[in-house]
Every structure is written in structure tokens, then in C-alpha cells.
Length: 304
Image 1 (tube, one colour):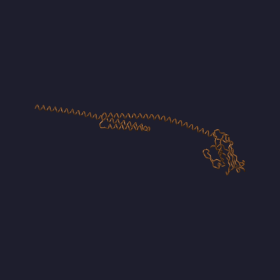
Image 2 (cartoon, rainbow, N blue to C red):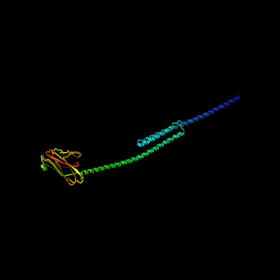
Image 3 (spheres, helix red, strand yellow):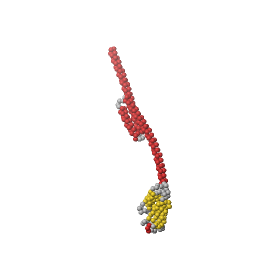
Image 4 (cartoon, rainbow, N blue to C red):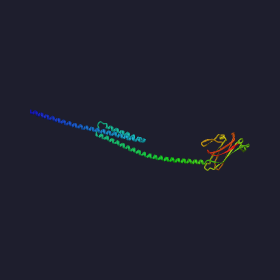
């Protein structure tokens, strides 16, 4: 009986020992599992942090890139080029973070890639700042050139106005003037003999004579004198060839004209008009003399 009790005690101790050992193993496994779970959770948490960090960095980069776009075509091309490179870099980092198993080395590598992403952005900012500086200098130089052009244009316009004024002054000064202008009516007798008359029935020739005043501005060249004889009704007696000349921008008929060489010697000129088949009426007639588009004298005569 004593031996049986002793055996039971030994068996009990063995069972207790096994239970203690199993309990210790269970506790150890539990603690290990808990630690591993903690590590997994930490790893996942780090992964999520890295992802969020990446997404934020990517959004910040794109926002800054969009701010620079629109300044000019060259800058847009630069931004688009860098944007493509950045998107390639981001895709590479995302691929790393999407792996099922990420260790510390992988996370460190991902963070290093994000760091490189920041460096790319910094370099881009430097290039854009450099471009903006160059554009600023070019803009200032362009404004300076525009200012110089405006000054030159203003000076040119002023010189043109002055030159035009001088030309106008010279044109006015070069207008010839007639002196001692008179018109005499004649009747033509047999053998061409002339007899002065004021009778409308016998007058068939009109002579207009005058001298040219001195003019040292007018060019000494060939000029044309046009004469208009205006009848009592106010109409110009037209020449047989129906010729015209320009006066104040309009074409007007003349009665007679001559060409002469101006010598500035107070030369005397004469225009002769024979009526031919033209009917003359009683009344006051007006004679106007023109040269180079300007009226240089006028006189009248009467037929009774």
C-alpha cells in the first residue's frame, strides 16, 4: 500500500512537471506571437506612413509644378519633362511599397527614393528660377529697346513734321506771282491786222500779258501757264482740246496754256486766244492765270 502511494506521488509530480513545461512553452509562444504581431503591425504602420508620405510629397510636387506652368512655352516644356520623370520615380516607389513583405531595408530604400524626389524638385525649382531671372533681364532689355524705339519714332515723326513744314514753306515761297496782268480784246482785219475793240460783235481775239515777279526759291526749269477765261454766265471757255489741269485736288478746264522756261528775270509772257466758232456775249469776263497748281494772277475785261 505504501508503494502504491509512492507511485501515485511520482506520477503526480511528473504530470505537474509536464503541465508546468507546457504552460511555460505556451507562454513563450504567446509572447513570441505577440511580439511578431507587434512587429508586423509596426511594419504595416511604417508602410502606411511611407505611403502617406509619398502621396503627400507627390501631391506637393505636382501642385508646385502647376504653379510654374503657363509662364511661357519653354517653361511649360521643362515642367512637362520633369513631370514625366517624377511620375516615373513615383511609380517605382509605389511598386516597392506594394510588396507583400517589406523589411527595414526596403522601407529605407523607399524613403531614400522619396528623398531623391525632393532633390529633383529642388533642381527643377533652381532651373525655373534661373529661367525667370533670364526672362526678367530680357523683359527689361525689351522694355528698354521699346523705349528707345519710341524715342526714335517720336524724333522721326518730329523731323518728318519739321521737314514737311519746311517743304510746305518752300512750296509756298516758290509760288510765282504775276505783275501788270492785263487782258485786251482785238478784232482781226484783213491780212491779219489787229485792232483793239470792246464790241462783242467784232472781238475775236484776246491777249493776256504779264510779267513774272522775282522768285529766288522757285526752280529754274520748264513750267506751264494755264489760263481760264470765264464768261458772264460763270462758265469757263474750254480749249479746243478740252484739256484740264489740277487745282486744289480737282481737275478743271483751261482756255489756253503755254510752256516756258523760268529764268527769274522778270520775263514777260503772253497768252493769245482766238475765239474761232465760240460765241461771245456782252458782259464782264474774268481771266485767271495758274502755274504749278496755284493761281498767280487774275484780271477782267468787258465786252459791250
